[in-house]
Length: 109
Image (cartoon, rainbow, N blue to C red; front, side, top):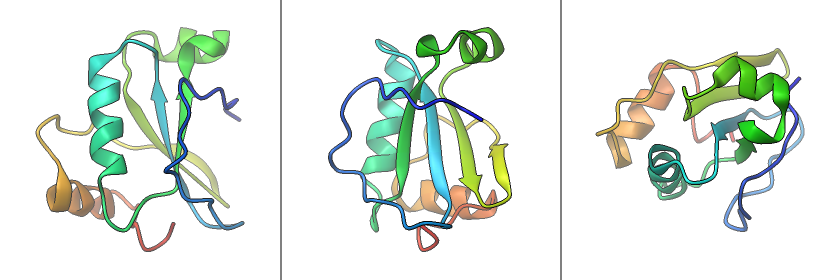
């Protein structure tokens, strides 16, 4: 299981209800791609249950993901699964459609 070490505070994240899926954003401090994806995810309406995980805070995650961040995963009752890489130009409604296509709906969170 992934350890949670947020790279910066996330006060705008809604509190996930037990049993509902959570979107995990594996990131690192100073990564402009990570920051950009976080901003796009936080701008979605309705808001997502989003958890930031700093890969540099866990040696196993750092070894596994190295410079591949940002990485999105979904945590649910069935465990965690990695989503494909998000196309960098997606935002707003297009990003919501992409998330739904890959099994994560903002209505679930």
